[in-house]
Length: 190
Image 1: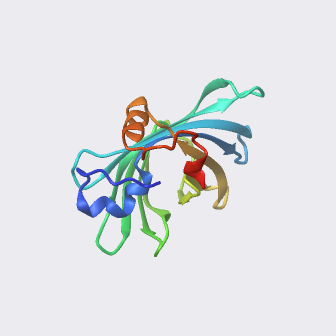
Image 2: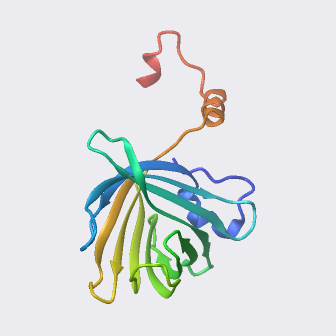
């Protein structure tokens, strides 16, 4: 269920499906790098201004699903205008700064993005641009990323399925808002 906080900037309502803490797993596969499964934590938050703050941390998962080592981290700011155009400024731990532009799909929570500008430090690896697709599907946040370098054409390299994390405070709020249950508990579902 998508909840819209009362203090959310009204212009960000179309992006409300992103808000919250998300956790899940995915696959990383790019030529010249080790293919792996990864875990991911993503947070989309707001402070009332006209943007969402975004952070993502990924780590390589071992065969038993344990954290082996960090993979990638990024943070940024997401905005949307009245015409459903999305813009993002993002910084990655590898020494890359990106400007992304895209659009929120009509009548569904899906965002298609493409890089418009990429700046790299001398220490960063080769990277020339990317595309991403984010979607809210059956209460999960799913995404796929594509990447290009001077030697590799644009191709998918990361994708993940994330589930919303419920905090103890959210559980307490849900409990306060439950309707009265019948004594046997079963009649409620009829």
